[in-house]
Length: 368
Image 1 (tube, helix red, strand yellow):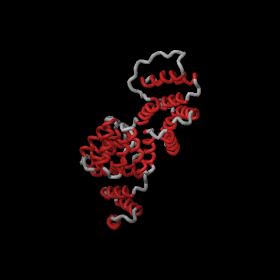
Image 2: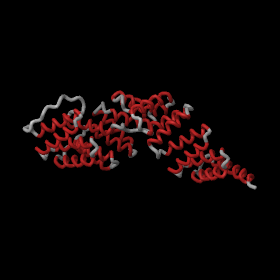
Image 3: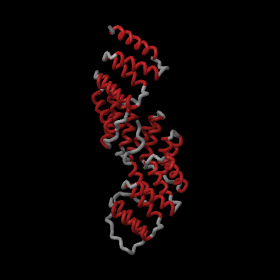
Image 4: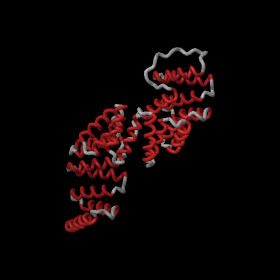
């Protein structure tokens, strides 16, 4: 379960794009001077950006509004106000501002990129992709647009194109930590462990607080059998962002591999508290309970997994064996028959059919 983006990516991207558009970001700022009524619209815009950098969103908004009152056709002012509105969670207002900026200046590449970010976050991938494409047609050196387009291409299964986009983004901006992390995800899926590890290392060098990169590097450690290294990275990811279900799930798997069943169950519990429909976590927790001999809890968790996905053949198999261990032979027979129905070409078909025959025989012998 690989993460491809940091929980703070939206705000980070807005800040990066503010840097792209105006050569500045919300970092350290000098004290803001008073703006006089005689200053030009451009000066108000610059002062608004300065307030934005200082973290004074209210004053920044006021300055952007003043800019537009002076010059209603100032596209960059709508763009910057849109960035601030998106930053504040007003996505509808932000899109409206980006639309106006584009209407006033159809060649404003960053406006397309910013609007694409909102479409992307809302799941409108086609609209996002169209905006990223337009941004790149206007500014082929916009690293963030290549990165974001790469995310969409990766999600669509076009990994070669995604890698090409990440490569281009990194070439244009070698400090774009998220691009290294996302490229590492694809390399890990492609079984290129050295390449994935190198990308995660670089991402963490650039951003030592990127929880997703620690999580993904933990997976890479896990895949190559370094469970100690995996646990250390999962622990660090959780310390940085304690609300990502997938990290607890993956740490639970590592703990199972180390025979720490109690720790694994605790991790699956936390994963399910964060994401109650994480079907695999119910299944893994059921296995852990069963390994501890707690058959009742195991069966309850198999039930919960099947309530969310009734076509999980292996879950019927495992619940059937757990029921057999409880001497619930009729329940075991029912589950194992469903397993064989769902997997008629299973390698263990004859073995499982043999168990069914044995259980049916025992059941018939128990009847008066």
